[in-house]
Image (cartoon, rainbow, N blue to C red; front, side, top):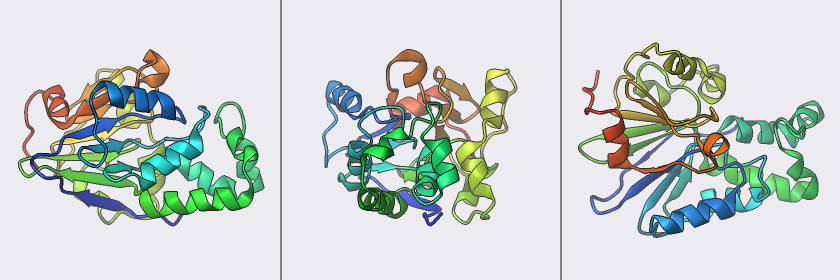
Length: 234
């Protein structure tokens, strides 16, 4: 998987930064909700938690929006990771196109189009993103975070599966077991879990569309409020 490990984004003080949970091919819904909050393309910044494709019907539109729109960024999700494998591996493709995964949309596109989409994903969607607002930082990684955020900058190759697939931290949060504070960062935002909005320590899971019918789109200061107090960097 030929993707970058990390991207650092430094917005201006005037820019609003929004974070959105897993969209899963629901491009029109995303645009409608962005319109409702007054999101301004090229002025505001939008960070997506990955899994922008599959299950919905507007997958190519989502890839192009997330990779070609000024001020819009996405981390890689496990669904994009599977897509990158499925277009070259028949066994993975048979799993990816199943109803459970929701990747059957790729059968509607010629292989050359899929290769173009894969190139956009590989070039533009890293494993992790850090938003540096000057007085605080927010990290975004699809499923699970390392204990110290600085480890996302130079991860071990074997760490990517954990970052894209693990539900351990989320399960702990839902079971009432406080996760250890993620060091080196103020807030960490995740998708992946198809649940209600969940907060544990300085981690926030915002993949709510499947359970509530509404995408969670939160501004950076709202995320700080969710973790209640600005945590100290470890």
